[in-house]
Length: 287
Ligand SMILES: C[S@@+](CC[C@H](N)C(=O)[O-])C[C@H]1O[C@@H](n2cnc3c(N)ncnc32)[C@H](O)[C@@H]1O
Image 1 (spheres, protein in one colour):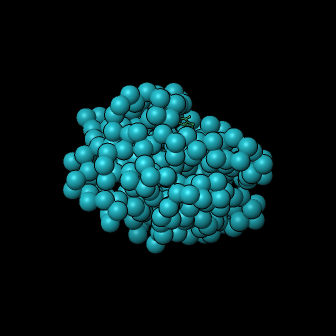
Image 2: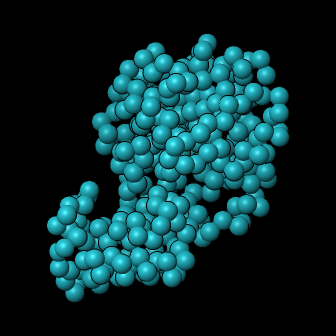
Image 3: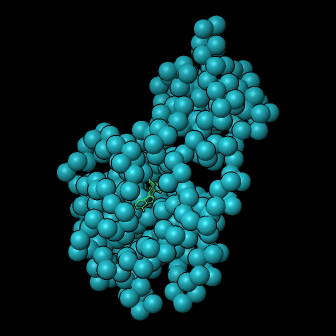
């Protein structure tokens, strides 16, 4: 088994596949693919590492690694699952693969920026697989979550995940272009990982990204289209002392420049990643 794991990792590294859709190195990626191909229980047991691998099993692993390399399909799509905030989500090419640094903040119930105890209503803009909404529901057991997306296909996957996590009572999925379908509803927390990739950057992304929905990545020429709408309309849907938290990735520089008048707090994450800002309802209303 160990030989198979290291041979698979070496193949992935040699082929220079792109890591960043759930793993960040060849060894972890190889382990995920081997475990899936051999249908081994996850998390791994000590016995799995010393078991003998039959010829047929070895071929199944090699075929999966070959697809990863030749078609550049992210491992999460080949496996059909991704982990986010300690939870497992079903994923396929209808949705972005969960990987937002927001997981860390959600696991803390958004503390210290808001008292988790007083959060009753949360909105997730651009829910995709539903990962952020579902993780919020788990971290904030007294809250109800509205999760919207413009993509009907993404919402199909989000529905599957809401059902799997048995959160149908507390997570409501809505088809909406940004805040369009919300009426006058207001929230203690609005959280979003919106599309934020500009046209030029989109063309330069590694091939793996082409398997993800374009609507989940692209946001106009400069990548700011969705963020601009969120900044324009979020205040109308925030309760007093509510917070807006938005991931902007490496569009952060452009956001700072385009909205220089807004007093953003840029958050730091122990587990890595960045480009996430926070604004209070009061800051947005004053801006
Ligand atoms: C970067 S993905 C984030 C998905 C998920 N929240 C996550 O973190 O993995 C952005 C999501 O926003 C959705 N989206 C794009 N344009 C939108 C719009 N105009 N209104 C609502 N959702 C939109 C996409 O369909 C996609 O699911």
